[in-house]
Length: 246
Image 1 (cartoon, rainbow, N blue to C red):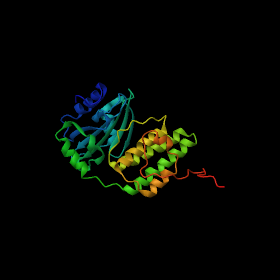
Image 2 (image 1 turned 180 degrees about the horizontal axis):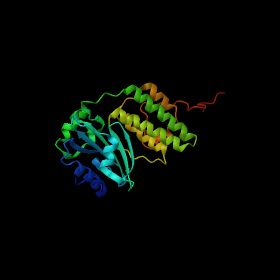
Image 3 (image 1 turned 45 degrees about the vertical axis):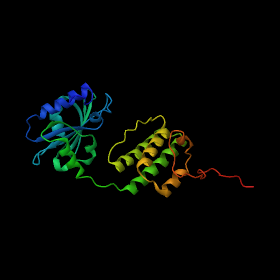
Image 4 (image 1 turned 90 degrees about the horizontal axis):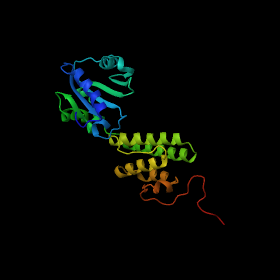
């Protein structure tokens, strides 16, 4: 596991790998997300994907508590997943599932830490479950959230603006099937919005209707951050007269 996360991350992963060594229910323990890619911070949580035998029955909460014992201060289980907060405030999220139920959302950053399955085999199972996104709906959601971010920033509601930018970012993640690598500054929601819009335009065509909506916003600050609205034309901003009449 050399090179995967910090020493603390590696110790946490190693504990789980050791716990499952020789367990007939477990076919592989895989790491994904920032710890796997190298984009981790020392406070990053650990995302684990545990591939089980087809006939294995796993109770997520009971399994998490068995793994960590009294160190598990909080266990939030839902279905085949559990989010665990340890007494050291380290966090780990684990999903247990048979190979055929692998999520396509983990395939881009998958790294097998232990087991009899290779990463390509797990990734292929995940890709088989990928459903094409509803691109037009997600672009609508993204632009709506962008407008909401702009409005909240203009009204001095910084927290609401940041939330809207994050929602737009989630729509972009759903469109691409993977997280972006953007490092956004929550103190500058319009700068963050600029980055999300630029990422979107790099891969998707917003179309004239959505572009027209974005053109009605005050994008000058965004343009200063590197965002250019393709084919833009001057359109009056909401509530502001575009010309003086005689």
